[in-house]
Image 1 (cartoon, one colour):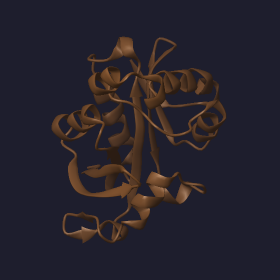
Image 2: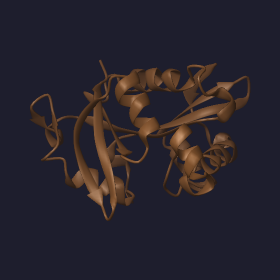
Image 3: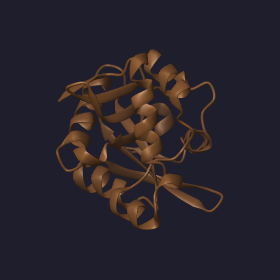
Image 4: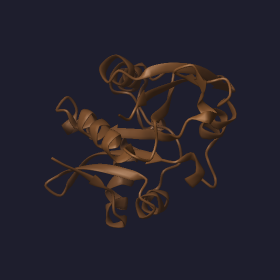
Length: 183
């Protein structure tokens, strides 16, 4: 498995992977079992993210096995509502006793793994690649996970050791904010 930065040519495969794992494309049982992604990440959006270096992919001999977003909050000119809510909550969210606003951080996510690659270490490989890519760029990597996405919570908090920092709510959807030192 090759973990690398995404390139523009990856956009169609990334869009297909994202769409197949989107909340709206899955049944309630599938969402509970495998987790889900949300947001409007079409091929054009993913191509632009790849061109600005904010996506990592797991490449299995030319086949996309997974993707992960990793971006500076400053690089998001039109952030979606959950990112805006997280950024608005920076003073209330603390990392090791300091307000998140005072710490250089990168936003982690979305992350998605192809169905036939789940349980094979792809998410862990992408996570490790994100930690390496953050080296020298940030002190902490921060993600928000919709509380209904218990699978993602188990993977990131229970499995990868990300630390809960707090929560925010948008309408009737609650999100947990988690972080991990990149060192």
